[in-house]
Image 1 (cartoon, rainbow, N blue to C red):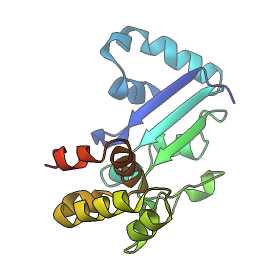
Image 2 (cartoon, rainbow, N blue to C red):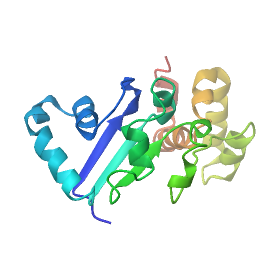
Image 3 (cartoon, rainbow, N blue to C red):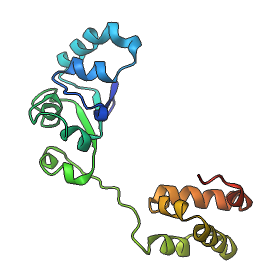
Length: 172
């Protein structure tokens, strides 16, 4: 699907969003303020066709606002029925709205043995694997970050590219 407009909405601003205009004003570059009415008119006229809303931080948002608002109307397709909505949230906050989405993706980190298993399976010399394990032993704060697979992949990439760079990395 082709999007003509992608609207990223930072829901962590903790403000009640009662309209599309409010949503755009909260999250737009100040240089767009004079064009908000035109943008709203276009989006509403097309019922959101070609528009993707990236709603970030829904779990924080629902803690601070009324249950009935524009964000929920957008998610449930009571408004802008042709738009696409992508939502980020902690899973526990999405129970009441999951039925409104075609797909849900949950990003889960490694379990207790996940880092160890990952390091055993990757195509890396045993010496580099040992260096990474030793680094984790002396830098537990970095190891804790590596429970997210992306972070571990980045560390492995750094170690594979230049193993000495790990010993010189600033870890604070």
